[in-house]
Image 1 (cartoon, rainbow, N blue to C red):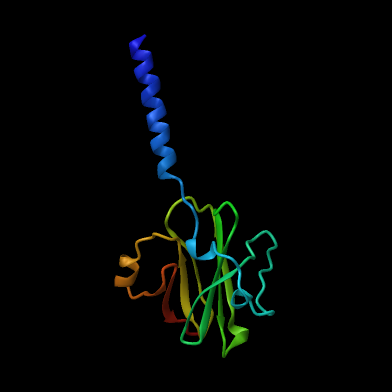
Image 2 (image 1 turned 30 degrees about the vertical axis):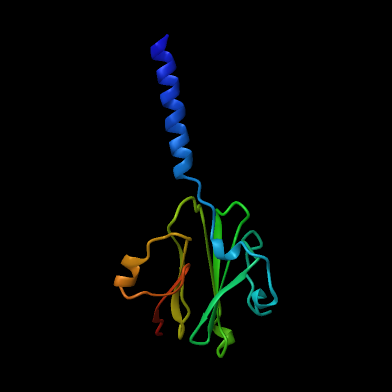
Length: 147
């Protein structure tokens, strides 16, 4: 009987440890109240209505605004990149299946810097050593995409 109790207790402990490891809580920067500055320009829209659409402005760098949105369960996230002086060169990219800290999605548009959205808490040191420049906790930019 004692063996069964220990086995059950061990199974419960393992389950709790597994649950604790997979308790991803989303992108902190998008979990704030919306403000007027968070409104995407009217021409920037995702064609997929199933993707998150409640964007927050994360940062602006070199005349480019970087927005992010995520689903209520934090499993899908998007980045919208809007170059203020070249508004026709905007881009949006989304990814789903997010359950832990990781790179989420990388987007690019000819003439604009490549942008990468990462989860809160993701270790970006390797990316930075590869030439990515961190402009926000959740956004890194790379080189300008050439034709």
